[in-house]
Image (cartoon, rainbow, N blue to C red):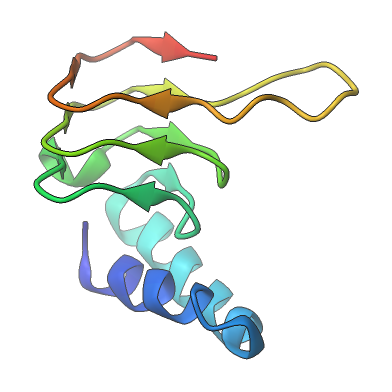
Amino acid sequence: MDFFWKIAHKLYKIKCLKRIARPFELMSMIISSHAISAQIEIGNGSKFWHHGLGCTILQNTKIGCNCKIFQNVTIGNSFSRTPPPIPEKQNKKQVVQLEMIV
């Protein structure tokens, strides 16, 4: 991920700095053209190819270790009124473009 996303991700982990993290998250979304929440959990060795171009990953998502996520991937979306379950990508998975995991 880009520089602004990494700053936002670190700031979201500190509860009192969540408001400060949001502008960095928005800058990342504008520069890299993605909608990847800085509140997600990403395992070691996981990578977003092409800086997550066109990806949409919601805030409660957990991504395992050594995953490769390519462009135009959507992870974690639900249109029901009940809170959606947290989608989890297991270790060593590859998600190709135009794939949706709900």
